[in-house]
Length: 245
Ligand SMILES: [Zn+2]
Figure 1: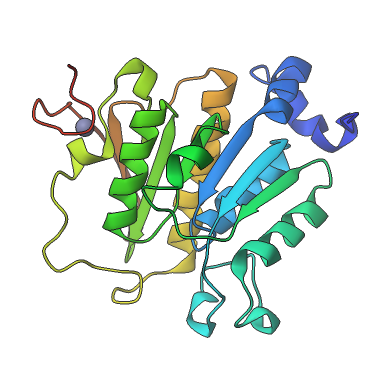
Figure 2 (figure 1 turned 90 degrees about the vertical axis):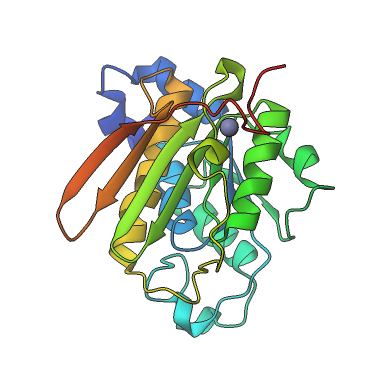
């Protein structure tokens, strides 16, 4: 497809993008796991930037309590399946973009077959069990992974690059919290999820363009204090996912 360059005029002006970078974005394949509070802004900004091939994995339906943060949906979408609504919104928003949906739960059986089709995966899910599954599959499939999470007014962000043997999500969180928090049990503000989800899109775009990204680092955002802290993340020698040999 001929890219309508007029649409991307303002980002083509960026020294790190230009026509060559825009073509890289258009050729890229990015999978977003979870089309909720993080996935909505991540998907929207990927589509806005002209990421040509977007995958979207979500098996949930829209609930009224999603609507304070899940910006791809509105009140008429309640009880409808998120994946198909999101695909329609994103393809209407930018017709240059193809969106493939996986309206199914990720499992050990299907995850590698899905991941192998993508250049970058974004973890935008809401529970530790899925995060560990995604982290392990990304490492096994050598697919770069952009992890984001939010809780109350805080958010975290990191980038994992298995081909460069970086630290992984399980190096940061080796153990699941004993009483697992889920998005249904803690408070969350849409704007906080919007910030971290947008940053996940940004890190993915930077990775595709070959720019600096948050490898071996953990960004911690605090919306109350207006602070961003970046910590080094060391590989754990006993990590079952990313240790060598
Ligand atoms: Zn690890």
